[in-house]
Length: 339
Image (cartoon, rainbow, N blue to C red; front, side, top):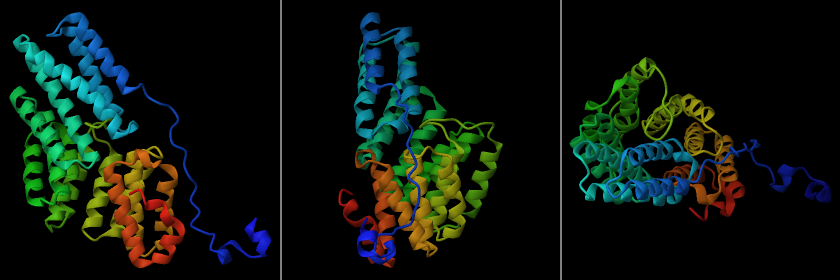
């Protein structure tokens, strides 16, 4: 309309920006996490304060559900429900269950603590995250559960890096890798925990990338969910490590592969899209990078952004603004005021 009114092209009126189609986020909604925790509490009422086989089975299914559907809920919403389940575990342990059931409850409590730690990290509460993850490590060690111990140590490594403690992060990463179970978890520890810690300390990422790739290639299958690992996450970690190492051209293909494997609008898609945008900034492709940052804002409502996504977007926009403040202001404007 403005173009017809003034007899001008869109670019002459400052109305253009990189045209990238906005993808549609998945419309199917999973079961409410509240319904899951309520079912656990109801079964506990039936079986009594120490619980029983049905309560244990329900708790196990709850952990699997929360881990599998982790990316589908905002962290604040999921935190309250995971905490309700862990409170049920604490209550059962407080009533001195039989030894065998006590061991199972400690493992379930460990996984729930690991989830709470990861959720706190995604809310930007890093001290709280480390407290929950230390609990998970302790419960895993006490119960003799190497997979849980490895995952919780790698998550603690992630939190330590976020707090600027790269040397501690590397120690935790390698401690977790000692407990890794099979090639997929070995690839997870290398890509998620060891590789970014090495880069943060100034080491060449190439040997760790090669080792992670060998482990990933040897894995029989991917595993979905927060406690699993897949190729989308693998390529995201490689992209971000290469960006941190100053190799944006090498990061580009990994970021693209990761993004293409995730549903539009999901946290994994956001992280990969912003890694791709940052790679483009550093390659001098400012128009494409600006369009990618705008695409994320077009696709994801502010209330569904994790703290980690906000940090990625803030970093990307800061670099864009350094190179071309006029374009950044034109395309993104005041839309970043909530960050």
